[in-house]
Each structure stands twice: as C-alpha cells, then as structure tokens.
Length: 224
Image (cartoon, rainbow, N blue to C red; front, side, top):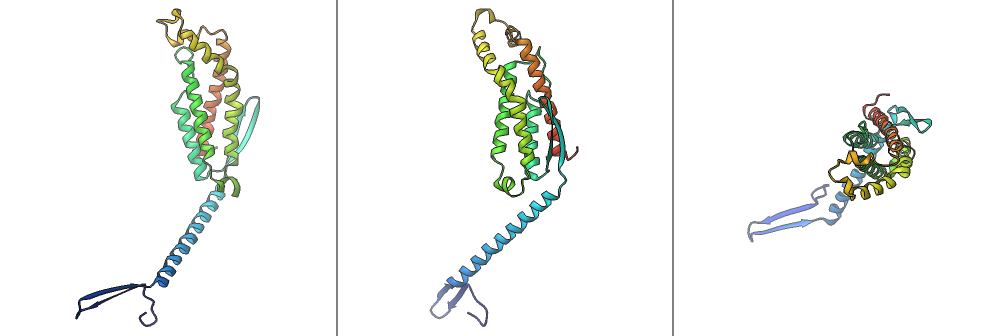
C-alpha cells in the first residue's frame, strides 16, 4: 500500500544484500479479476441486447410459396443467423441436382436422389444448430423453420416415399443383369415400369426446388 493506492504487485530490491523481493496482494488481485469478469459480462450482455434489437427492427421478408395444392405465406426476419442458414441451403440447391433443371435424357436418377438426400441432411443440420435464444427469446427463426420444414415434409418427402426406395432396389438389380452390359445409366433407367410417372413427379419436385432457391435468395438479398 502506497498512500491511498492499492498495489497488486509490490517489487523491491535491496542493493546492500542484493535481494530482489516481489509480493502480490491476493485480495487486490482477486478484486481486479472480479472486476474484469463483471465488466466482460456487462459488455457481452449489452452487445447481445443491441444485436437482438437491431435484428428485430429489420423488416421481415414476406414470401408466398406454393406447396402441393396450397399457397403458404411466410414472414422471415433477416437476422444474421437466418441469412446464414438461407445462404448455406441456397448454395446446396444451386450446386447440386436440386435447383438445376432436370434433363431426363442426360441426368441419372440415383444421382438426383443423392443430391436430394444431401439437401435433407444439410437442412436438418442447420435446423439443429439454431440457438435457444432465437427459438425461445424472440422467435426470429420460427417462420424460417416452418419454410424449411414444409419444403422437406410437404415438397420432397411424398415423392421420395412413393418412388425412391422402389426405384433404387430395381436399379441395383437391373445393373447386375447381362442385358445392362454396355448400356448407359440413362438408357437402363428408362426400362423402369413406372418411369414416366416417376420422371413427371421428379420434375414437379424439381420446379418446387427451383422456386425454393428463389425464395431463399430473397431472404439473403432482402428483396421481395
């Protein structure tokens, strides 16, 4: 202690005996650490409060999306996390055989199904990673969650349930037949008994996913 000042570390040097002494005030050090922790928590709280309020002030993007026979409206807030999720799924759509128009003469059906499966996986992982703050405090992702879930459950799942497993089983068995030797996958898949219905249904889903990508882009860009 020097005057009225509290010293955390006191250093002295005895020139006669050549002794260096350093003492630490445990109480002063503990108080300093406590003040730093409290200050950090206050800063963190104020930062999150400001961030959440800024996000809530952003005008949500209104979307109208046709799923099945119904046109559903969504109001998605352009929070940082919502934009990030929309961007990740948008990239997944436009870089795989999802939001790219299907060409029945060139595309391989099982590869399209693989892309759709990947889309399912990415979407579910993004939904799992939504923070509790967004889900419980301000519900800023509620409408986005509904949009993503509806596309999977109303848009993709019915086709996959009806066609995917049966076609994959048939295709794997067909590849083992001698008559398939030397034929391309595109030629082989056309032998499927329900090929025309399957392709027409795939094209319907494909158009849905193309529109889906456009809606996600509105969230990313902030334009209706």
